[in-house]
Amino acid sequence: MGLVNSNSINNFNLKPKRTTTCAPTLTKSILVCVVIVTLPILVFLHVSSSIPFCPSAVSAGFYSSAVEANEFSSWAGDLRDAEFSWNHLRFDDTRPPPEILKIAVFSRKWPVGSAPGGMERHALTLHSFLAARGHDVHVFTSAPSVKMLTTDMASSAVTIHYIDAAPNQWKPELAWVLFKAEDSLASFDAVHSESVALPHRLAAELPNLAVSWHGIALEAFESSIFQELTRSSSDEEISPEFIKALTDHPMKIINEIHFFHSYSHHVAISDSSGEMLRDVYQIPHRRVHVILNGVDDAQFTPDSSLGRSFRSSIGVPENASLVLGVAGRLVKDKGHPLLYQAFSRVTGNHPDVYLVVAGSGPWAKRYADLGTRVVALGALPPSSLKAFYNGIDVFLNPTLRPQGLDLTLMEAMQCGTPVVATRFPSIKGSVVVDDEFGHMFAPNVDSLVNVLEKVVKEGRRRLSERGRKCRVYAKKMFAAGKMALAYERMFLCIKNERYCQYQTII
Image 1 (cartoon, one colour):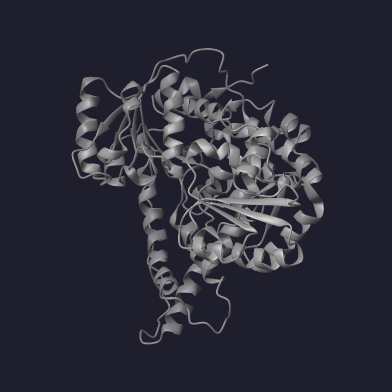
Image 2 (cartoon, rainbow, N blue to C red):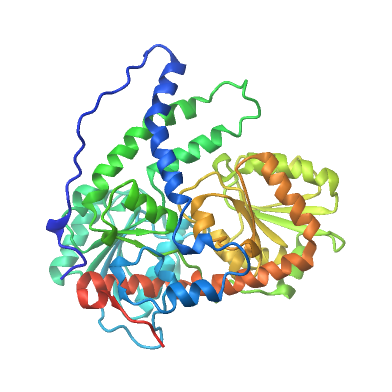
């Protein structure tokens, strides 16, 4: 018996309401009308996110005994009633799974290149672990380009089904045909879709399907607002991209609220995303499960010797007082306009502070213009990331994207590196849940400058203390094994309700 009965999925009905009439010839009038429609949604979201379940409410002192002992360590009950992240719970990794599951995975891409995206890395880490646990995992995905194929793919424990289409071109209907053929041989116990890889019209047929949301339209709309606020002057003309976002996103949000109900089970990858799905998207709470992403805690570990070698190899002088680092795509929505301006101001007062930039994109040349205090490395292969995180004193994530939960924050914390990140609900509620883990800033230049000045004033010794506490929390919450065991339990619960009952492991 599945986690929910497919007949219990309620249709979402909207009653017609009076609408505000806008003057179609006036851009400003259109913008005002759109804001009037969408502002209540955003206000509701932030009110909801401002009173999160226990984790983000703990900010005074190191995140430790009080919350763990009182709220999570002794928790028992039906996992479908847990509105906190399952990462807080303990799942026994010393025993084999009680049942071997046949699991189908729909993913637009499967990482075979040197620098996969966050969603693809999540899918690879999760399902490789589940396959290593003995589960029969089948991935339905787009074909890679020939040059990206690797010789060790055949030895993977995951069975990969490539659709017959051009490389990297996702056609879900073709994947569905392959899925139905494999399902006819032996039925799948659980089906997993990475975001909308499996469209809702097909997902509606599967009561044993769970979808992991790596970003939703409501969060994307917030992102467009924050990006527009980076304009250097209020006198600047509003960007065409923002006008398009204001006109397009409200309908995207409404459409999502409609079709999300076609998916039987929802995995939110942050606590705040879980709140949105329950409170704004109106998904019944027993169908929403919060499981934070995880990273390979065996790969990402503290290594001070490796860090020193890395700094030396990239030309950071030994007398540098502090080394900041940022990684990822160097584009506007990742917050690089903020960091570029903020570091320009900070380095004027502290010429011995360095910034290491790992990534590629339009802002690479801008950073190079800042002179020798910026070390631009280009995109790093995954094998070099551990050295990068260990070679910096603090990791910066100035993202302007509230959606999802960036794996780089988790990787840095696993390496014992404190973080500076944008104060978004997902980060505040699931990652930087304690002041000791680093600093957060409002998504504007002045706020980031103030935080960077605090970091410089603290110095390496204080930052190292913060980093050690980051490592303790990250190892407990963001380990790949913890994430995979939580998914395993959810898939077991989908197959048979008796696995939904959780008892505290003594």
